[in-house]
Length: 122
Image 1 (tube, helix red, strand yellow):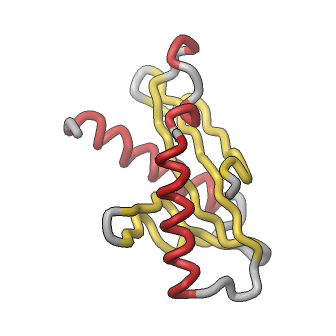
Image 2 (image 1 turned 45 degrees about the vertical axis):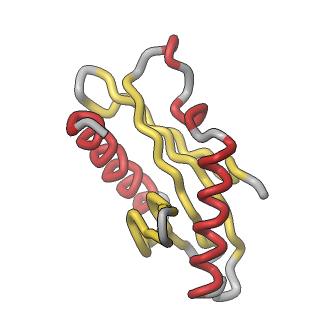
């Protein structure tokens, strides 16, 4: 991945973590890996453990939504990573959710954020 895209992606993940924290979630892990699988953010609140895929994209309606980049393979990988995490840590009696956080960037700044809850289902 080119350094510019990595920087944009990292900034998007920072903004997504901020958004989740402001929404009452506690960040447990960022970029949690199980072998070749990775989850961008794992967080929780009193009710849910959330596995969040973060997609950052320059704002341009012609590009479509950032979440459209979460294809079937990425969904399968996120589900597998969540299953590995739950096998290690359990649910602690909480519900599990797979979300996507969209970050739109315009003129080098975050323009808009969208938290798509339950965006991925098994």
